[in-house]
Image 1 (cartoon, rainbow, N blue to C red):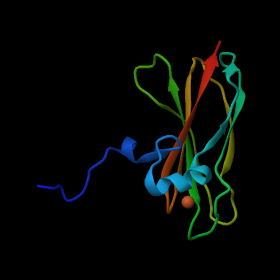
Image 2 (image 1 turned 135 degrees about the vertical axis):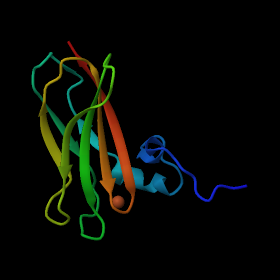
Image 3 (image 1 turned 180 degrees about the vertical axis):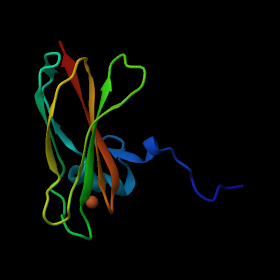
Length: 130
Ligand code: FE
């Protein structure tokens, strides 16, 4: 018997540049978050983390609604750490954010964005602390 609908876990419905398939292939350039951060930083020394999405339409009908930033800390029992949440008003606010971040340990920065028509997209970048 076929299930009525496929019940995927949330991780399986977050698109990434490398995993995008089918219709999502043509959307990955305009939806994958671009993460700008240093490859290395000193412990507890602030650095700027910039994340942007696009070029992408920015209208009430179709826009990037939010970007959430997470950090997966190496050796931590439970991950991730929430770094910041940013919501955007269609038409007036482009999906580009900068956050001042300081970290104690190495790990992986993750950015997740939501487009109201094209769903969830994420990207990641490793950062070494030391
Ligand atoms: Fe979109």
